[in-house]
Image (cartoon, rainbow, N blue to C red):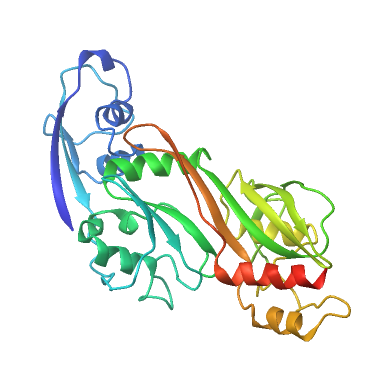
Length: 315
């Protein structure tokens, strides 16, 4: 782990404020939680002495703070192709294919998006999670944003925390959905299966908006947008209201065929082995310019093919 030492002098205008609050304003590239943890760990000294985050500013104090830079040595850089939609000095927009895990973890220490990012840009090893600020499930495809520096990472994390990032997904579900709507039900870990999430009274707030794009004989093409970003949120919410995603191994239930379905449709549904969910559109404020930027991509081939086959059944 590398370290940077930053020296700041707190001006008189912060008189009476909490020191951690003043430092957060003086160090916009660092989150308040990062600053607070540095103070508590003794990595920040006020006039050469330890202090508490809640201590008040008088003005003129000299603070030296040691910033420990995370070096992801345990994550190997791997030459894995990346589909980069956009890049500048601050951010990367990635089109993640289904089947790619976002970052290393139990059972998946190699072959992840994070491994690919570290190979693409070695400087990302200095950032938490190689600059990744949100995730998509392994078998969900589509758009993700990655930070390229600490300032961008802090800014993007704050946008996700305040739910100001707009994410639009497209999904294919079982059932003939009559109209769109909103699911506003809290989500928490399933009490019977620790791998799954479920709608629970004591869960975290979760809001999903959805609308119908197209209806088929026994399926519906749906657009979904998130106000919150809970684990498996769209999968859980749509299953909860009776429209599970096609191909979803956790929440989809048994494989179902339309009545009098041709063999082509049966074989296509059998072969679709991942949840039919794609992150189609991403809108956010750029970390440096503040400009609202938006990216949109087409459906991957497997979902397009599935829709074509479902459409042919209706003709």
